[in-house]
Image (tube, rainbow over all chains, first blue to last red; front, side, top):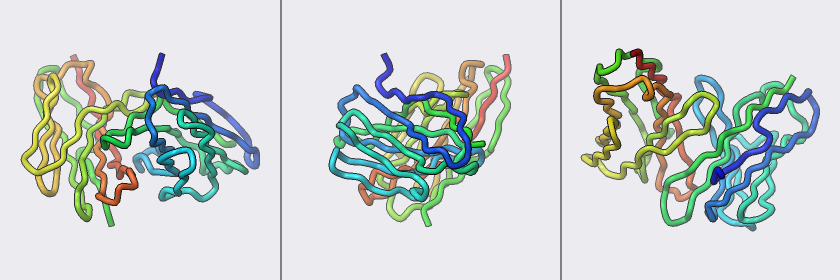
Length: 112
Length: 111
């Protein structure tokens, strides 16, 4: 089984809809991150969490919210999706002991 | 402003033709530089972390090196299975864990 899983893997939704992307990990890592990837722009940080009670905004948090339900689960929500949120979304995890982040397989989101 | 620039954007090689990918960075104090490999439709896969100028890391046909301003990913005698997008990222010493990514180099190795 994969260490970091993301659901759904693909999602098509309409403008104005609320959508949640979920990330689960079995690596036992404390730190979790949400990134989005756009062609030509690389990956950019949306939110990050160092433990269940710690949530921090990244560089592009507007229009997004997150919930850290447990050490192993970190969800990203789009309250009212808009077309420019069409992108690949990746969850990553990290132990506090090293600097390496491990990425999930990604969710391809299309907002029509 | 912290920034990472990768070149070239795309690279086509014949099998066995060695080459290098470049990652230039500007960051106010480097905590670490990371190389990832990304296959189409998949998440980035960790390759290397480099921390100080002069450091080198190797894995199979790949070798990563670091200077004070840039990093190189050398690919020796590549095979078609090395075809992927290679991502470079830096981490500043703020301990937010934030990685600043370059836009990637897409490598295609033809048999």
